[in-house]
View 1 (cartoon, rainbow, N blue to C red):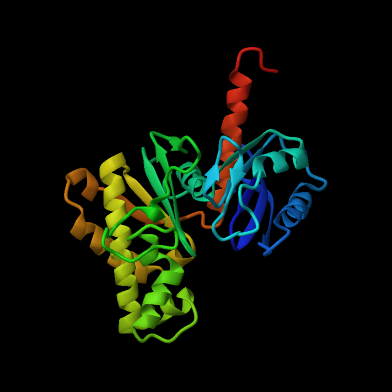
View 2: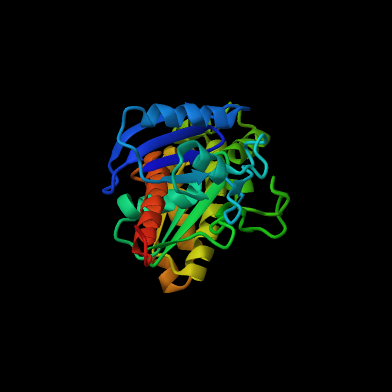
Amino acid sequence: MLAVDIGGTKLAAALVGRDGAVLRDATVPTPPTGVMDALTALIATVTEDAPPPVAVGIGSAGPMDALAGTVSPVNMPSWRGFPLRERVGELTGLPTVLAGDAQCFALGEHWLGAGDGSGSLLGVVVSTGIGGGLVIDGRPLLGPLGNAGHVGHMIVDPYGETCECGGRGCVERYASGPNLVRWAVANGWHGPDARALAADAGRGDPTALAAFERGARALAAMIASVAAAAEVDTVVIGGGVAGAGRVLFEPLERAVDEVAGLAFVRAVRVVPTTLGVRAALAGAAKLAWNQAASRAARPGAR
């Protein structure tokens, strides 16, 4: 199976077996323009001299219209209503399925990673933005247009700051990497990015620690709300900011314990990704394998 992961900072592709084993993979930075050209070259690199895949699974940054097969990634301004599913189908000549990259992350972790064995799972990618995906009773919840699980734009403070999406008080405004840095700089911290902020928090810098505490409380409010609404038993967190380790997960654990009330909400397990960047590729491949199995099971299918 050919799996493709498309984000604002990188493009990745892999050949993935039925058991989830990555047989071959490659990654390149996402160019500001000519994204489809870069993707075409990447797919050619992965598939050259390899047994032909039977289908393609794509995980892409959104929002999207899964019915039309189009995507409009916030961090890729050259793509607005871009017919990604059609273009990849034409390129490969293969059946193609499209979902959100964070949805694929969640499915990959449920299949092979930290969520293996859980009944219902929320996957959260904390990076330049915040994405999410839900796996309910073992099945991905994608939504009518493919946008289910956009937890980064759940409102955690109705009187809060205006978000980049145009909403107010979204969790992304408080907990994404750039917004952690923005708040820290406004409060006297001097540093270039979220990685430096995490390093300073690890050394005990009070402003850096406060930034992660603030972000963790926003994430905790979102997690408790999703757990109450969907009764997920596991939350898996990945993305660049999750690499901060204990400076994120320790205040997050405390905050979930403080804001959660109902017993089934308090019981939710919050863990870091075990697959890392492989998770979205695994999930995209799983979607494609599921679609191939569904086609084969139809009456008259060959």
